[in-house]
Image (cartoon, rainbow, N blue to C red; front, side):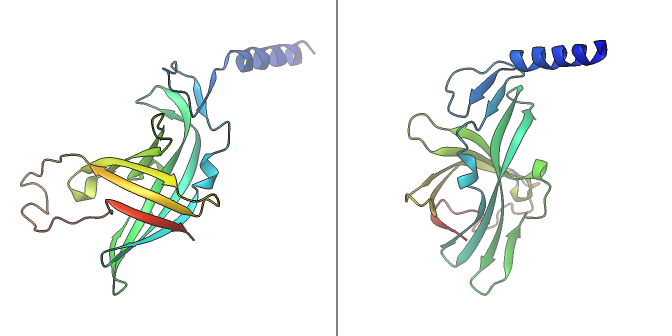
Length: 183
């Protein structure tokens, strides 16, 4: 009985000291806290989204990750990851990272933006010479079946070690702007 009491006391102490913050917290979050999807906003983004740009079709699968410790931020958090495949107009596969493990996803969420209420994601593609950028997504309709996508690429330095060095045009795995439809 004494051990059960101690276990209950320990669990109560831990749960009382755990700091939980909303995804829309725009102040510093202390180490080892939890930035949680309290309002359950991220599931609306989950699933497969499709869009067409130029002569390419993209399929992006967004998935919610929960209570994952983030080495950079030093706290636990909920966020989205994205995996995609791109086909040309003939159906040939151009890019596909859908089989990567979740911790290796090339697109991962950084959170909601205070200024424009868009969800921000980071893109880093080691297979394309470390191409990187910031993606902003937001719903364009009340049914949440249309998603506006904007990619802002960083100024990447391409060295001669890159297999695409001096390739013109440089391969583009992701569109800069597109309207995605939920599948």
